Amino acid sequence: MAKTIAISGKGGTGKTTLAALMVRLLLGKSSQAVLAVDADANACLGAMLGVQPEGTIADLREDVLKQKVGGGGISKVEAFGMGFEQLLCEAKGFDLLAMGRPEGPGCYCAANNLLRTFLDRMSNSYGYVVTDNEAGMEHLSRRTTNNVDLLAIVAEPTKIGIDTTRRIADLTKSLPIRIEEIGVIWNRTDSVPNVNLDGVSVLGCVPYDESVFDIAVTGGTVFDLEKDSVALTAVQEILQRKFGI
Image (tube, rainbow, N blue to C red; front, side, top):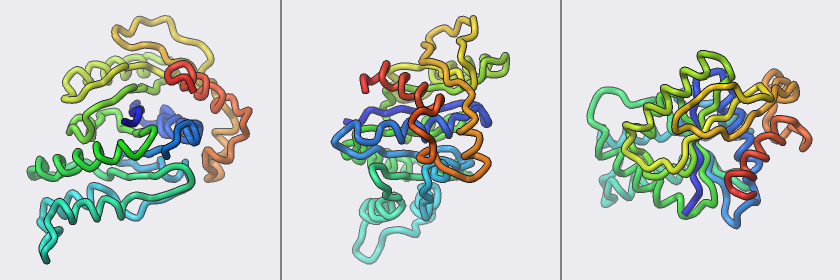
């Protein structure tokens, strides 16, 4: 069973960059590939990893809802599975799956049940799953997965960042899934703020890194960063402490 890391945080805090850094660092740490899941409606994870999927799960889910899949001797489950596989963007050492926009009006129970079934089945094929979520964690709240080993909240050491961390941590209490640990990564700083976040561990700090800013400006990817990048080094230390890698 894969180790699942879910990344959350307010927009603009750098969560997508940190998710991409984790994917890079987890490559080769298991005999199996890494699955990167872009669960933010404002999909940017693929760009940071240098790959771009051709479609999203949201599109496939809408087709299920509107009964556009199945028929011709093929069941909806089989058709969904085929569409699911086609949406998987394969790269060197990792695969990318884009979730797409949140749900619109209508009942998505059947489609989400299919999605959860295929995601859980897929997890057996990967060593690690890294999911980049929006702050509201829409896809997790819809129970599109059953287990999260680590929910990492990315925040800056400001009052807004601290308040957002508390809100996300409170939100997890209502999620119908198992979350083994909730922790915060303080981004663009080298010191931990003196604040009590009940039930939220401190995973570490990631200092501001000019080279990360440069790749964002030039349209580069996390694979363009040098191995001695301070951000890359800091994220590596976090993964070493949590997973021993």
